[in-house]
Amino acid sequence: MIREFFLGFIRIHILYHASKEPVYGAWLMQELARHGYELSPGTLYPALHVLERDGYLSKEVRVIEGRQRKYYRITDRGQMVLVEARGRIAELVHEVLDEGADA
Ligand SMILES: [Zn+2]
Image 1 (cartoon, rainbow, N blue to C red):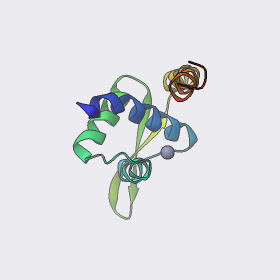
Image 2 (cartoon, protein in one colour; image 1 turned 90 degrees about the horizontal axis):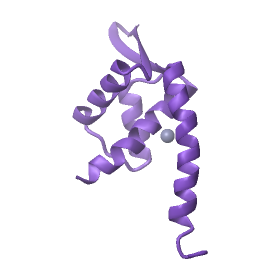
Image 3 (spheres, rainbow, N blue to C red; image 1 turned 180 degrees about the vertical axis):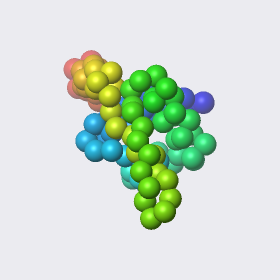
């Protein structure tokens, strides 16, 4: 239940990092853990798949030390969502964190 709330945050996080450089699952899991999101592969990989399927990420398979690794980078469509999300995040932060300051 709580996970559902944060799934949107996680998706935006993934888009953000994929806009900076190509990212892969294990790296994202570490990065998200650093931010306090303890994700299982069973949550992260389907999320990546959906973002790719819906055109927000593109996938590139590279061979690293003999093993295939899937790298994801943001698409133009994903970039549009990220830009829109920035505005909404700013508004949300303003409202939620300023609670009490001017209520
Ligand atoms: Zn991060």
